[in-house]
Image (cartoon, rainbow, N blue to C red):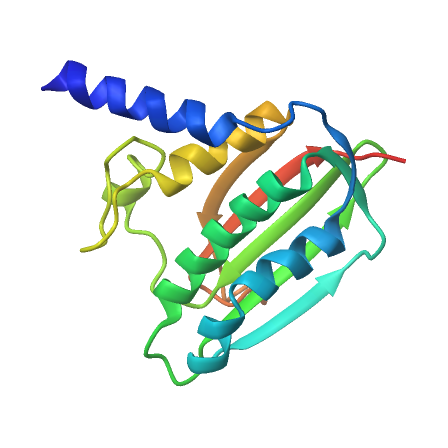
Length: 175
């Protein structure tokens, strides 16, 4: 059984990695806009304050469609986390330094329990009834293919954050 699960995971990862393989300068705002467009039907039916902030006009070395895939996954997870809250909020922030760009997606949901955080990027590990436990694993693999990282931490209302969880994509900037 373990071998079968490993084989399925490998096949899904290979499928997720399929792209042109050519990283190119990708406008971050366009990738975010594309992800939000794909989530439009859900965003229109689920009450949530969506706040965008940070640096504009940033570009990263990536494949736009695959970056959108990662953003859609992270935003869907955030929407799941804030579902049913009267004060539901998701923040999308972009920041850059000389060589790297950070895209942060934060929500004010319940956060990630420590026992779940330990296995968050483990295949087939999920706390969702309908989840497969592959979205974050595949997302991390895609970001790694771009030469970047995907990390998470708990939000903090003490530092002005919304609470909940914060996922950070860090990628190489592009001129």
